[in-house]
Length: 112
Image (tube, rainbow, N blue to C red; front, side, top):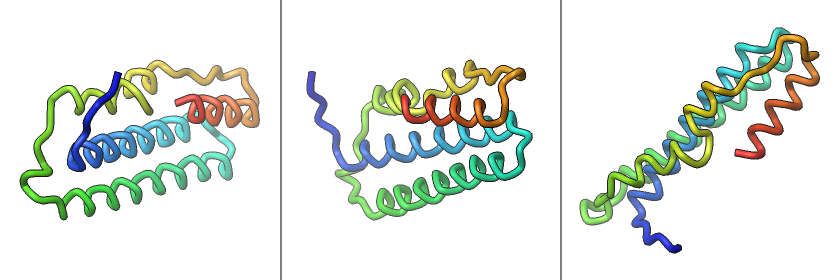
């Protein structure tokens, strides 16, 4: 099944993916007590914030014609990469070591 996305839709999706990614890393940082590892996750969230700014800037340069978008595309970003519900449902068991938590978070991020 193919989709025909215009530039505005692609940037909208990209922005949402970056926001969801930043939220994921910040939530995971809240579950880590090891300061360097927690800071790594916060740094990754900050990188996602910067990526979102780039996409916002690129999207702002689009013409009105390119801005047409369909409602289903807004939901697409939430349903695919860094899904908000999946982030809320993702649990780091307290009995894991900091290293095990880090591996679990990175495995989840890669899978998404």
